[in-house]
Image 1 (tube, rainbow, N blue to C red):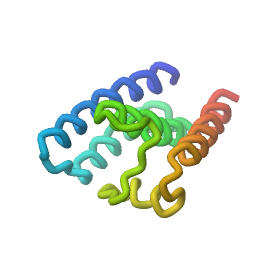
Image 2 (cartoon, one colour):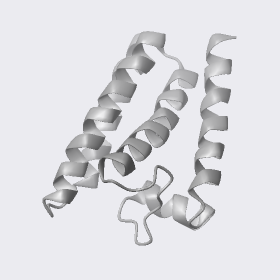
Image 3 (cartoon, rainbow, N blue to C red):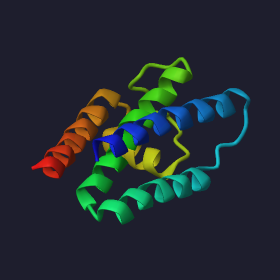
Image 4 (cartoon, rainbow, N blue to C red):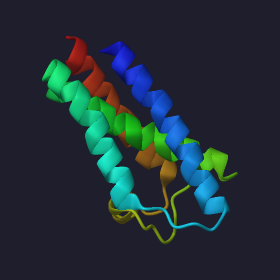
Length: 121
């Protein structure tokens, strides 16, 4: 399962780089397509391991790794929160955390850590 998390992390960084290029080229991000990619990526380990803790860890891995990598690739602060979010997850984060990215990522990291602990205990 550690390999699954490592692969997911690498894929998140790759997808963040792709989206940062699209943003830089003023292309539209198809959030629904990104969502389908993540559902498919999460479905594979679910069917292999049947472990909800792993799926939770992968989803919070996405929130941490993809968002931070996207900000860095775009030349923004690592804890950037868009003032006008487009993605559903970003809208929810903005509604809950406002512009406090450090708090948001601290909460995400705590939840991710909880899933990891539960996964291996």
